Amino acid sequence: MKLAGKKDMLIIGAALAVCIVAALVLLGPSGSMVRVYVGEELYEEASLYMDRTIVIEQSDGCRNEVRIEKGRVYMAFSTCENQNCVNQGEMTPDNIASRALSNWIICLPNRVTVELGEE
Amino acid sequence: MNTRSIARFGLLTAMALMLGYFERFIPIAPGIPGIKLGLANTVLLYAVYLMDAKSAWLLMCAKVLLSGFLFAGLSGMLYSFAGGVLSLAVMLLLHRAKDMGTIGVSAGGAVCHNIGQITVACMVVQSRAVLSYLPVLMISAVITGVLTGVIAKYAIEGLVKAGFGKE
Image (cartoon, rainbow over all chains, first blue to last red):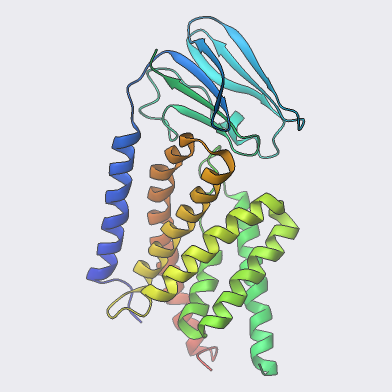
């Protein structure tokens, strides 16, 4: 039984190449506009430099709270079970290059996404 | 199916379920769903190498269904099923290639597992935001896929020596 050969390296190389291309394509220009979406629809737009809490309430009982505070934005509360969105932490224009999800906070179960983008 | 293969099938299903359950307690990247060690995939790799395709498909479906009912919930089941179908199809294909090692089969399967999951996420959320999962999930799939590929090679060889080889 073989562990690895040239073909294995080819597969790993191809996967890493797709990875780098995807990262380069996705790394958009940073900005200071917070956009909250439910599904594909824009729910609310706000400046990163005006402190406020955006509450997203949906008819099926899902509720999310996006907090904008001192130039940072994060998911402060979510009714979802896995709490991934809350654990994704805060976004600032400076940290999106090093964040795993770049300029997005994503709550998959509630279909809520938060983007930090251009004006 | 004779008694021996039924017993072996049950053992493999239990092992896949257990590995899938325990790796939930090893958080690699909090906040990012889908990043996990994929230890259960070593069991599936065993099936790919030493059993026929039909048994491998049956094992994957049993694992997804049972772990869905026991741990992951219905929506989790949907994600694992999409990932499982795509990854198993690719692993069955890759392992037929000449000179392909367990690392290539395993990493290819892991990457496709995550692609399947992202596809479901795209359909559920309908937002381009979901694409931002792609780079981080694929990097993690390559790393964990290589690791499980190494584990699978030595585990399978050990099992063959112990008399659990091809029937």
